[in-house]
Amino acid sequence: MTTGEGISQTVKSLAKTAQEILVLRFEYDLSLEEISNVLGLGLSATKMRLYRAIDAAEKHVMQEEGEFAPA
Image (cartoon, rainbow, N blue to C red):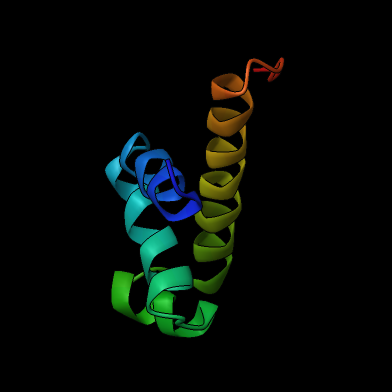
């Protein structure tokens, strides 16, 4: 499996809201302000959703690699 396939698989395993914000940020390279406008959220809520999505992705990767990921 290539790195790109692994990343794609990880993103697909996340909740739709997490998928959406990760794609907007890292695939479409939108700024946090642009994402907040697209999603109709405040900047603070956008930051929180992005950081939670990144955290969820990291935990998924750690679990896939057999490492312990705290809840």
